[in-house]
Image (cartoon, rainbow, N blue to C red; front, side, top):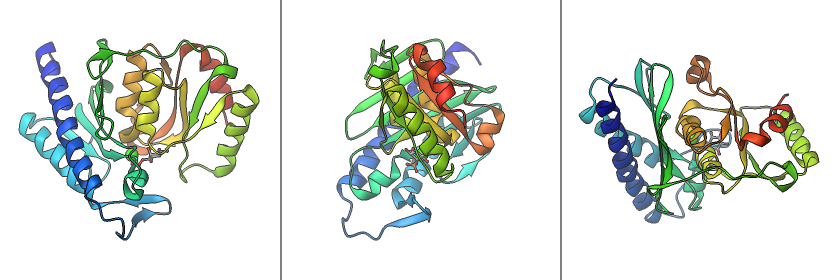
Length: 260
Ligand code: IPD
Ligand code: CA
């Protein structure tokens, strides 16, 4: 794929993430507090807005790039040589419970490599964007990972979902605590990883996360000078993977801590 085609896709991803984010924001602000909460499974929230926003993103992408493939968290899809991987709302639980911490995530993967990663947090008005080999930005300004190299000074977010055994989560949390890290958890893996890229925390780890949650944000970390595991394998597209994204000097300690 030539440079012009890739650049057009980058510009489109930024515009579509913002348009979709504005829709998420509107729905969040007009949501009915008394709304009955719905679930896909235990601890797995579903709102009507997830599907509505995914449809909008799929429509815009198919209008602009009819030959590209599409895979979304809600509606699925197919993986081909050129595919968009989309999470319409990452942080759905917070969205559903009235907490303003969520984002739209859009990745473009060409021949197995993530080329474009864009995240938009509509409540903070923050657009995180990266192109493979082109650096990472927040609202147009370059970002980089922190210079923290000592776990005792680090803030590490350890993501959780019921897809991984809780005992393993406790094991990793205990090891991180023994290393002296400040361990935290918030409700959006995508934003947690983007915050590493922006130097707001020093690592994000999770024992299992899906491709749509993390593909875009992993590229942000790589392009912001950080280290990530080999996340987007063929197997990850089908079944998800573990993720580690951190400042380069924390890599070794975190790889050991995450070994369960
Ligand atoms: C979840 C969030 C959460 C992470 C989970 C994801 P959702 O996605 O990113 O922070 O720990 O692994 O499934 O349900 O908010 O789209
Ligand atoms: Ca998600």
